[in-house]
Every structure is written in structure tokens, then in C-alpha cells.
Image 1 (cartoon, one colour):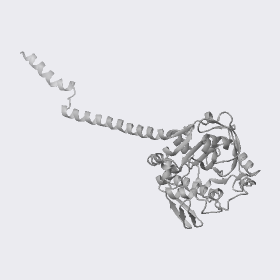
Image 2 (image 1 turned 90 degrees about the vertical axis):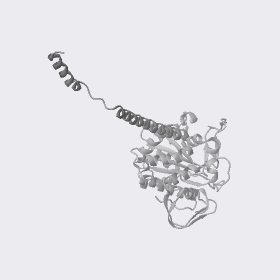
Image 3 (image 1 turned 120 degrees about the vertical axis):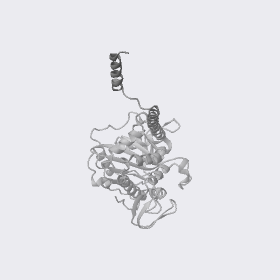
Length: 369
């Protein structure tokens, strides 16, 4: 080997390391590969669990296509009429409801019915209670067994649900009010109890003692934090106040509605994914909605859109009714008060004071908000 060859070889070997990166030890490469693989598996696992939870809860929701069930004979949706939501409380005693001490009655009825009107801007709301003992004209509907149900006059409002289901209740409310319902939400006894328990209870103040052997509610005058069972007893109490009629307990139902919404807002339940999941987990199996709300994303989106409403400004009204002349145990819509109330909701206008006064009040106390 010449001196030049030796010198060249030496130069090449001296500069060779600078032309390629030193490879890390094989053991370190294996460690990083395992870390990367673990991270990928964690992400996939988290995504899988999240999807499973979403799919599981989403599958619990039951939806009703109102347009298909009701048809085209519906009030016109005016561009400035705000949003109208029909909330139904079902008194079914089947399934999880059977263990709640609600009696042994077959079938199910709309134990509570509220038309919630949210004006444009969604900063306030009005809740109109329809007494379950109100005599109404039921429009032609499809019965639960699929048969055609002809129109009928002077039927009890809460019986509509038992023979034809929620879509027919929506149709009945639309026909009697001329107000188009954008959505409806139905919750049963178990779902109501589960919701209250999921948020840790609701604070209520009562002005007088309530002792109702039928519902099981026993409250002294003053402040109370009601759990799910007590809350269910509270909204169902009728013999412990007033004259024992359905009208007497409407004030308690309206009072509890305001308290429940206030608690949800105070805890910022709609702003916390963890708390929202807890509520969804307790509610979805007990909820039936229209198809426009029959998914977690749609339901959550609608709820968030209402988050700007201050429950303290919500106005609660009972549909003005009077005792029926043929059956004093039943009531009928009082005119012209009821007509004025529905007209104000249709036009998204201020409700006149004359439309808030009901000749029949059941001897109950008015709800406080």
C-alpha cells in the first residue's frame, strides 16, 4: 500500500461517520416502538369506549316522527313564533316504575302535560300546564294497536295518551291551541326519579305542611332538599293540598319545574361532559322524543340552546279552565281566557293578564318561582 493510498484511506475513514447518523441501540428502538404502540392502543381503546358509551346511550332513546304520525293537518309554523315544546310525564307503572310506590294501575296516561313556549332570542320561557282532567275533543288518530281511532268529544285529556300514544297527544294539543309543537319530550316515573337523584336532589320551600297518604309525601313547612323518591311524591301529591283535585297539585308541579331548572343551571350540568353523561345515563332509557331530538347530539344541542334562559324569569300558567256543568269532577277550557292565551303563544306576544286567570283553581296555592 502506497503512502497516498494509506493517506486516502485514512481520510475516508476519518470523515465516514459525519456522512451518516449513528443509529441508536436496538434495545432503545424497541422501547420507543412499544411506547408508540401503547399510545395508539390507548387512543383506540378510549375511542372505542367512547363510541360504545355513545352508541349504548343513543340506542336507548325512542323517537317518534310527528309529521308521519300526525300528517299534514298541523298548525302553520310562523317565522316569529319562537319554539314550542310539549313535555309529558307518563304515569306508566310497568318496568322500573313498578317499584316506586305509584299504585297498581294498568296502562299509562299523561300524568303531567306542559306546553313550554320559548320566544325568539331564547332568554325567557313560559310554561302552560294542561290539567289532566280537562275534557277535550280528541282528533282522529292511529291507536296503539294500529287501528284508526275516530275523533271523539268530551274525553279526558290524559286518556288520549293511553289509547293512542304521544303523537296523538301532540295532535290534540295542536288542535285545541292552534300552536304548532316543534318538539315533544316524554319522561316516565323512573326517569324523573333518576334525574333528580343524578343531580343530587332539588331544593323546595313549602308554606304549609303536606301529608298525603296516597303519594306517601310528608313534609313540614319550610325548606327541604328532595331526593328522587320525594320529588316524585311531591309532583304527584293531590290529596295533601287544596281540594284533592288535579288542579291543586299543578301549582306544586310548576314550583318543582322552576326549582329543577334552577338546580341544573346552578350546577352547570350542560357545561360539564361528566355530569351531562351522568344525567344522560339515568334518562335515556326513560325518554321518548320526537325524531328531531332522538339522538344524544340533537338532544344536547337543543338543551344547550336553551341554556341562556334564566329559570327565575320563567312564567308558569295553568290553562284557564272552569268546572264542567255536566260533571263537576271535570273541567273544560274557559273562554275567552284560554283563546287569548293560545293566541299570544301563536304570535309570540306578551300574554295578557286576563288570559292567566282561571275560574277553577282547585283550592290549591299558586306556585312560586
